[in-house]
Structure formats: structure tokens, C-alpha cells
Length: 530
Image 1: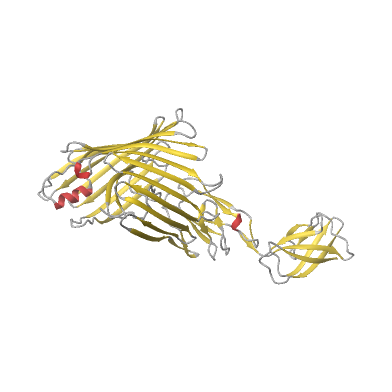
Image 2: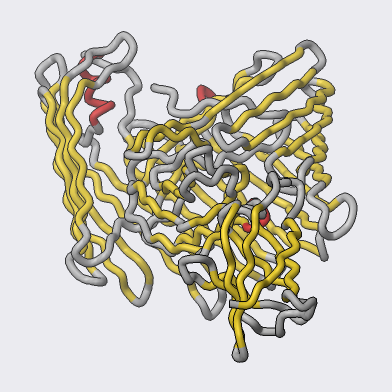
């Protein structure tokens, strides 16, 4: 019953990519509050890949606390889980939850086989109600994942759970503590989640999803399924889908929806602006048409916009617009929408604060695994692939949403480097574990970039290929065919030594004030023979 995620969205289709529910499968209760006050609720089932980890890797968690729910008892509990990679192809896992008048134990195994990834586990529970009755039961769960390379068929998620009548989850046990006799209570009997994707070509695919739940002591079932086809022609993509929801009248009854959508670019092939339209027809009598224009307003893809207009048979016409800005220290958004009977304005900001040995660094919102990047004392350096990420005045930047157990290439965006900065290595590879915070440092040099136009005392040019050195003997560069030497990071006053096969000479120089508007500054240098 607790809110784990809340966001304002413009009218039309929306997608969230930063929700991390716990556990390997379950149901999310989703509530959509329309601008006119109408509320729609439904359940979204989810399932992860089979429970597996690498050989020798141990993942564990221990939780102790109090289960709190509005107007219900709040028992204290302790919970522990562990996952261990026994071999390359076998994982063992289990856990236990202990509370007053309730205990549950789980044990399972995951197997990597030629027919796919499989995990199976059993949970046994024992609980007591207020009237002293004891409920005992078991719940078996099966998870499967497989890609058939021969037919390019992917079972992205497949799960099945069967529970006996006496099985109780911890939240159901809390309900038992509040109600001695609950008329119409039905424990979950079985549930299946299935996701299948079949590629037809490089541009087309079919997909099928199905979720079905059955209950003890209750006729009927809750079923959600969707079948669709998606394809593209050049840069135009389209999707056709039919979905069916079946449930009892208390939960909204049954409904069938037909959906058609199309998306096409506006402008040239490199343009980020796209127009998309989405039409929905429902068997309950409602129908709607939504159109949306979106894109980026800057070359760095940090400032995006969207504008929508639509019409629904039930709620009339709507229109809205929104802006999203990815800054180095936060994500900012604002939106406005207007319907037949309402107006809506929303503003939002989200970010992160990381405390580390180098100080405090502000950044964008984080996932469970992220990184800290350092380019010492160099401000404004970006990272390719992470829009809006920039180093601060101390040279630190937070890199969010890194992939655990994968190669993460952190390539500095060289276009964000000033002419007064040189970095020897602009690419690093990190492989973090899940939930880790990893750090990497890039060696950087800052200084003035200069071009010395050299001439010898007799007015002759310096030979092509001659080498330049500073006062400490450090190589600076090579003289070109027009007697010019490009150097970086030298002091404002000093001496250069030019050497070639037949001789050498030195240049004493004193530089004027730096002109930061120039990519490099040109200085005349008289080279005197040693």
C-alpha cells in the first residue's frame, strides 16, 4: 500500500525506465490520476530473469524492522536472503522471514542449461490468525528465460507460481491479524507471466504477453494479454496491438482495446524531431486520438521538448507542452496541460548528492550502480553517452546508471575540452559489481597552447624536423617546414632549446597576457646559436 514511485506525465503514452522493484517477480499496483480527477487503477505484473549469479559470487541481504500499514497491526520482523554461485551453471539461493505468529522459509536453485535459464524454488509459511487458527502452506515458483537463435525467438520473461490454500505471504498475514473472519477473502492460487518476442525481419517483429491469476474460493480469474505487431519503413515506424483485460466487475470488469500508432521524423535524416500519433478504441465505448511532437533543442541533447494534442470521446479535447533539461547537477522538468474542465501545471527537479574523499559532488538521479569520474581541476568535461554529465570546478562528475558485470566505456567528450587542456588517455573501462560505486581518474594537463615562429640570428629558417625542448629537457614538439613549433603547457617566461643533426640554438621568451579566445597564440622567437 505504499507509494514507491510518483511522476507527472503529459497526456498520451508514457514510459518509465527508472523503476527498480524488489524481488524476482510480483505485481505493481498502478494508479493513473487524470487531470480532470478521474482515477484508473490496474496491476502490472513483472518478472526478472531466472535467479542466477556467477561462480563464487555471494549476494546477501539482512533486513530488520517493523511492517507498518494504515489502520493495521505493525508486527516487527527479520528477513534474510542469500544467493551463491555454486558453479558456472548452478546457483543456490534461499531466505527466511520471521515475525510474531509468522515464519516463512524459501529454498531454490537456478540452472543454466542448453534449453535456457531455469530457476525453481519453494516457500513454506506458517501463520496464526487472531482467533488462533494456524495456516500452513507452500508456494512453488518457476522462472524461465531463453532465446532461440535458429528462429530468433526470445522468451524474455516466463514465470509461474502455484500456492496451496494455506499459504500466506507476510502482507496477507498482517491482514489476518486485523480481521478474524474476512468474508470473500481469496488467497492467490496460481499465476503465470509470459513474454514472447518473434523477429520476422530486421525491421518487423511480433510480440505476445500474458498474465493470468487464479484464486482459491473464487470463481473466475484475472487475465491480461496483449498481441502486437511492430515494423518500420525507412525512418517511419508503426505498431498495431490488441489487448484484453478480464476481471470481476468489482475490479473494473472486462475490456478489449485496439491500438494503432505511428512515428515519423520531421526534417532531415539527422533531425531529432519526431511526430507520433496513437489511436485507441475500447469495447467499453471510449475512443481517443493523441498526437505528439518531440525533440531536442540543443546539439548536446540535454534540452528536450514535447507538445501534445488529443481528443477523447469521454473527456473531450486536451493539449499540453513540456520541457526537460538535463543539467550537470539535476534533471529539471516543467509542463502545462489543459483539458475541457481543467488546467494543470507541474514543475519537478531530481538529482543526487555524493559524499567522497574529494568533497561533495552534485549529480543527476542515480541507479543502484554508478560511478565517480575525476579529471583533476578541469571544469566542464562531458562523457559521451551520458547527456548533461559534466565535471565540476574540482574536476568531479557523477556518472549514473552504469551496468553491473558489464564493460562500461567512459569516453570523455573531447569537444568539451578547452584548448588549454590535454588528456593523455580519454577512454577508460569499468566493470562494477551490482550496487557498487566505482571511481576512475584521468590524468590531465592544463596550460597555454603556443605557436613559436622561429628564425635564426642570421635570418635563416630552422630545419624541418628539428626538436624542441624545455629547460628541463622535456620534449615539446617538432618544427614544421615553415619553421614553426607548436608547444603546450610552457611557463609564461623561460627558454626553449632547438636541436637538429648539424646544430642547436635557444630561444628566450616572455609571453604577453593570455588571450583565451584563441585556440593557440602565435609568438615570434629569435633562436640564438649555442
